[in-house]
Image (tube, rainbow, N blue to C red):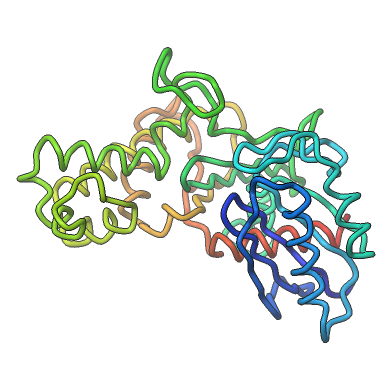
Length: 315
């Protein structure tokens, strides 16, 4: 096939691009997400597709949606940050654009891009973990995306890590993403800056002296200035991340874990404590091969666009 359009639909923005067979994005566009109105969201998607088709012969559209997608890649069963509830998204977009469409979970789409064109391109057994506000994930075995019986496989952020732990937006307690996500990183940094401000001087300077104003980019910047509280926040979150990776290794035994998503831009600040915790927690450690843990090579929006477009190409 030739050119396809990939669309990454998030709770606040919709990013789209025309993608060729080698995974190169030839043209890009984006709009805000009217997240409380399903029809307006579909219209925004269709508008982006119409804009991007100008000057390109496009054959299909792939949609990466932040939610549970059914086994037929047609309906969004549930989207926690959008108003979609059992939404027939594929049919709606095909009617609005006149192009065949495929719907996939956004983390699956981004993971597929890393598997095809990024950090996992040489590995047939792969788990991609997207660490952003929460944790998403995707499982690729023998170069096939594992979607499960109902299409909802890979929701690894909702593994129960701590019995009766922090309440999660999914309704359960103690989910992994409550301890190893961007939100968890900010929670740890704000707590340390409030309770031991002497350890968070650079961090508080960046936040104008207000612990409640600390955000993820500030924590990364302060950690690179050797701010003790910022470094400790990464150690805590990275350790939880490594513990979850060790559990996944026992179940899936992949050759590589790829860490993607916004928090992965911190690089070794996150990767080093995660790798140490993984090796310390792995069942049978010292007597079994260990998976490689690497950072993703494609940016967040870029990976979602490329993966969704490639899934549409091979629908």
